[in-house]
Length: 198
Image (tube, rainbow, N blue to C red; front, side):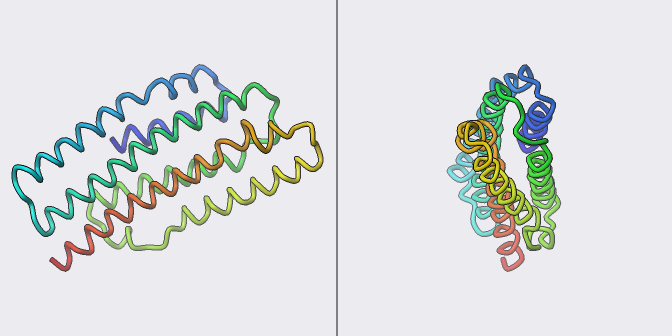
């Protein structure tokens, strides 16, 4: 499921930067597999709880998986949101070169790979380190928003295009994607820390 979420993030970013409406449409229409996996993983976790009555480390692991599962499904949903915002963006000439938004996408992908890798390999040290990619993504988001407001003051006719429309819309989605990845990382960290104690 994490691999599918990562692939969708990569694909929507590539389509957005290359201005490829067909690829954006594929991302928007392709969310069913992640949704099905979320239901399947939830069902397996609840069956394990109901049939085997796990305790201590085992129970904490299952609860962590349930939380991470929800956040990964949300990453897939946000890829759809980015795709829809990208379709609106492509209807207009570019406001500025796409430099910061692809960078935010790469930061989000880095967080996803590191969080899932640490969960699989039980690397508590990686989970406990400061959320540097999330901080960088927030900084990039602030820089982009500041630039857009400056552009708005210079070109008031672009009010929808810059502030309320296609260019602005993907930014919160990328930032929220980073938030979901950091929360998933925290779920793994909690499981790992309690495992060490138990």
